[in-house]
Amino acid sequence: MIITCDCQKTKARLLALKQYLTTKVLGTDFVCSYYGECRSSHTETFYEGQLHHLGQCYDLLFDDLPLRVVVVGQEYGHSPPRVDCQARYNMIMSSGLDRRFKAGNGYKARNPHMRGTTNVLRLLFGIPLGFGHDSEFMMVGGKHIHIFDSFALVNYLLCSATSTDGKMRGLATQTMMKNCQGHFRETMCILHPSVVVVQGKTFWTWVRAAFDTVIQETDHVYRAKLGSTETFETVFAHPSSRSPHNWGANNHTPYLLETVAPSIAHIHQQLRIVL
Image (cartoon, rainbow, N blue to C red; front, side):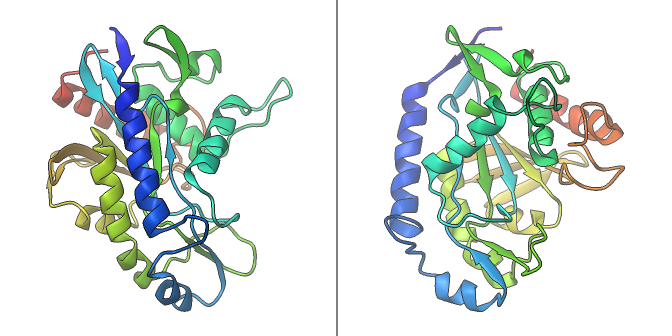
């Protein structure tokens, strides 16, 4: 298996994404035309303009077969506001390089969300499940690349509505979900993903509605189309869900092994990627 990356395509996607988001969401100021409507729909804490992470090696090729992975969450869920793409990239890469799957040797552990993300990226990129940090790197075009630099982390919502009690739980309103759908759809058109991993079933209806057609293939896998983009979508519980759905707790929960892994194997088969 030879893994390469079309880095020029990734650079072009990042430029297009930044141009769109700078014009429509967050430039030198927060410019989203829906801000007033969304802000007035939630009377408690509101963090606006939290943008996406796009790895520098997003446009992966496995023996010349494309594998562009987008992981989708509902929202960032806490402060700070006004996080541009570069700042978000720095956050995600810090989680990958400065933290570990398990705490130890002076390193803090990643949160359950990012542990779940680590698990699903390992499965997608053909790396056996585990917690060793060295095994989180892939040889891509002759360079060792951390898996967090080879995917996009996109939140459906570009703002977070939370409570005043400081608890990290999303309180997004229907107004926010409706208004952000256009931004999400445009992001998907720019990223042109091969695989979309939806982390959380509660907002799947909104994600699904952003695509032109969605056809279910298995309990957790769908084939979707958006303009010229054809993609596979997987819909799982959030990695930080309570047992038995807590696939971000470690690298061997039943949900991870019995639900997530078989779904990813099905996608590999459909994409003809043999790892």
